[in-house]
Structures are given as structure tokens and as C-alpha cells.
Image (cartoon, rainbow, N blue to C red; front, side, top):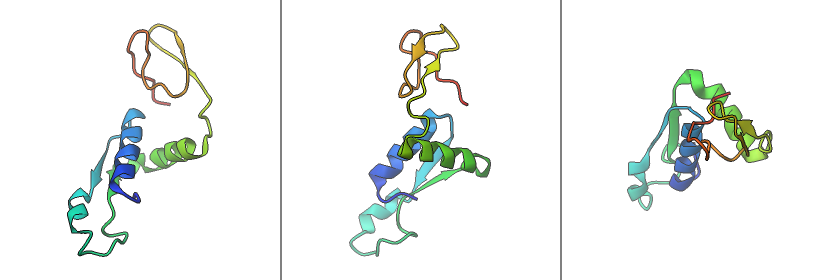
Length: 99
């Protein structure tokens, strides 16, 4: 669950970049916020497969609290050394391997 629609899409985009398939649900309720109370039932939610839940939670924690944020990675395609914030290689375009 996200606090607002922007946050939901940012988290969903981050998870997608990490190779976790998800979708944002509850967007249609935004139009009714003046009439509906803002509760856990009306806030946008990020849905994903149950088997991806633990990994998604771990990735979100790492992103929010900086654990592992400074770790770079090596492109499996061209062996270029890349900083942690990149999700694909700038040199050859290969995606960052899923850990």
C-alpha cells in the first residue's frame, strides 16, 4: 500500500526495474477522494505475485534505508563496472542481473 498514487507508481517502477512484476490498483478511487474517506481500503495498492512478496519487501527496504545502495555491479555482457543506481549497462544496454 502506498500513501498516494505517485508513491505507488514510483515503487512499482522500482520493483519492475528489479525484475519483479507488479501493478498499481485503486487508481480509479482517486476521483472519489472528496466523497470517500482516505483509508487503507481506498489508498492505491501495489499488487504482485505471492512468491515475489519477500523479495519485493527486501528490495524496498534496501532502497529506503540505503542497505546495499553503494554496491556497484559488473555488466555480464561487456564486463563494464557500473554504479548501483544503474539498471542497465550504459555501454552495451544489457539489463542489470537480478540477484
